Image: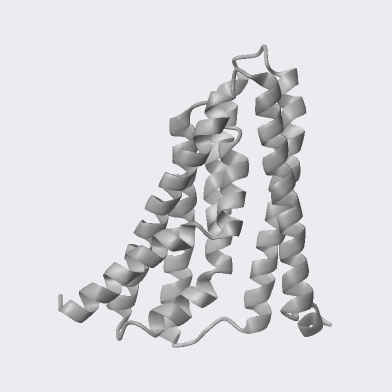
Length: 220
């Protein structure tokens, strides 16, 4: 591996970590980490998000790199719009989960189901974010590498950085939620705050894409 390619891959790894810290990514995963019972569950939520994100980036990215094409702006913005819808859904679901937790607080059998849903949701969120970000990923990859195998390697390294970045973030963000598990009032306040932020940011995200970036005008 020559020095130039190594430098590009190292940059891809760093950009992957930075990519995990984008607001919409952090807010989405925070809504799931807020409902974790243990710190390792919050950490795994980040790992599964990164896996889902990387898989879709890899599959879609390689297809478009081979075709030497890019996703049309109309569809790229539309996929980004789905992220906004998902953020609103996750925010509302997080706030409604407080009532469900109260109803099932004396039923231990409910815990395993919550754990499975948590990882499934994380994987799905990463999947959606991966689809939405595939256009930018293709452009970035095509501008830095010169062959399909290099593109595949770049996306994998980028994805590895993203997984590590999200693992670190969800572990850190999970700490206050775990500490507040036995403090009912504090725990509810944190979940409500996270859910409200996700909902408001999701609405703003959709408005910005639709009005400021011109998505609505492209469809009308």
